[in-house]
Structures are given as C-alpha cells and as structure tokens.
Length: 244
Ligand SMILES: Nc1ncnc2c1ncn2[C@@H]1O[C@H](COP(=O)(O)OP(=O)(O)OP(=O)(O)O)[C@@H](O)[C@H]1O
Ligand SMILES: CC(C)(CO)[C@@H](O)C(=O)NCCC(=O)O
Ligand SMILES: [K+]
Image (cartoon, rainbow, N blue to C red; front, side, top):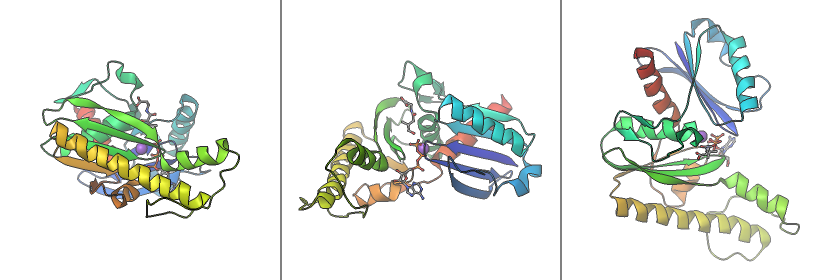
C-alpha cells in the first residue's frame, strides 16, 4: 500500500491506498503527539510514502523522522513544478509556490476537461485559476478564517467577540456581530469576485477543498467540494514519478 500525506499548517491529512482505491484515511492535528497512531497497525503493509507539505523546514524534518519511525518504506516529498503534462505553472520562481496548490491544481486538471478555479480554504485561503488549455493564470493568497479571527483578537485591544459562526452578513450591532457578520460579508464578496473571474476567464468548473470549504459554499460559492483534492493530485504525480 501507499501512504499519501498532505501536511498543512493546521492539519495533516492522510490516505492509505491499495492498487485501485483508498483503503483508509484520516485527519489529524499537525502538532498531535502521535499523528500516526491510527496508521501504525498497517505500517507493515506500506511500500511507499508520498508527501505534499507547506510546513517549515524544521517541522518537515520532524515529520520525516516520524514517518521513518513508522515504517521502512521510501519517503518522497513532492514540490511545485513548472509544468506537468499540459498543466503549466504561472510562477517564474516555481519552488516558492506551496506544494499543496500545485497538487490541488493537478488533481483538478487530471479530473476532466475544461478550465477551472481551485479554492483551498485552509489555514490560508488560496485561489488559483487554470484555463482549459492547462495554463495557470495565477492566483491569490489570503488569510484563512481562523487566521483572520486570531489577528483581530490579538492585534486589536478592544475587539473581544464570541466564536459563534454567523450565516448573515447584514450590518452588525455588537462586536461579535460586526466581526462574525464581517467575515460572511467578506466571503460573499470573495465568492462574487471568484464567480466574476470564472465568467471572465471562461472557467467551467470550481472546486473547493480545505477545512472551511463548506463555509465557503454556504457563502454562495456552489463549488464541487473535494476534501482530498491535494492528495488526488499528489497520488497522480507520485504514480507518474514512479514510472519515470
Ligand atoms: N476539525 C477541524 N480542525 C481544524 N480546523 C478546522 C476543523 N474544521 C474546520 N476547520 C477549519 O479549517 C481550517 C484549516 O483548514 P485545513 O485543515 O484545510 O488547513 P491546512 O491544510 O492545515 O492549512 P494550509 O494548507 O492552508 O496550511 C481552519 O481555519 C478552521 O477554520
Ligand atoms: C498559502 C499556503 C500557506 C496555503 O496552504 C501554502 O500554499 C504556502 O505556504 N505557499 C507558499 C507561498 C506561495 O504559494 O506562493
Ligand atoms: K491545504
């Protein structure tokens, strides 16, 4: 079996795959004491490990030693590339792009024809546009939901608020409402902007992934929710690299 790992800034997602399908999968906090405790019972069956990660080099090394302790299988870290097949990265400095963005794009690219937008609503929010011919048109990086709330709480002395989620974006009449409605209002604006861009660039598909994917759809995105998109792209690339 192959172990696929997507280690983000908040959470680690993993899948154990057989020849044809995903056999087991899970989510775990990045800083969990025993992130792979669920996987140890299958460690003898793991033949190869493929990783997509955006964590710091220190944390990446720590992750690598954890994986080495889990089993003896070779570990391959995959990074952003300037192109793969017909998919062409807009970055000149390709290695600066988060591996998760490239793998998510490749996952969407491999899934079918037509231009698309990929939105990853994780610790940070990323938006990437790819034309039907595979040209990455570029993207955006924004603070994610928890990051926005945390910075309001930490960096402004008098903004105290409850954590309850709001669905409405109308003007608030308390700090909590102003903050929580503000988030909905901002997201609705972002969604409208993404939809306008998709129309302008002629992109037919919108795929959303990440911990806040549902919340973005609730803000009107109506995208296909693919929680495992990064791992779909990673799996495809790792398989191609194995055959090279
Ligand atoms: N059970 C959960 N645990 C942690 N975050 C969650 C959970 N459910 C939803 N979220 C939301 O998901 C976001 C984190 O998403 P995700 O797990 O996709 O991030 P990540 O992949 O670690 O981040 P990134 O790839 O951006 O570094 C948080 O901002 C939070 O609002
Ligand atoms: C933006 C995040 C944090 C999203 O996970 C990640 O893709 C990343 O660390 N990117 C590096 C910067 C870039 O993509 O240009
Ligand atoms: K991610």
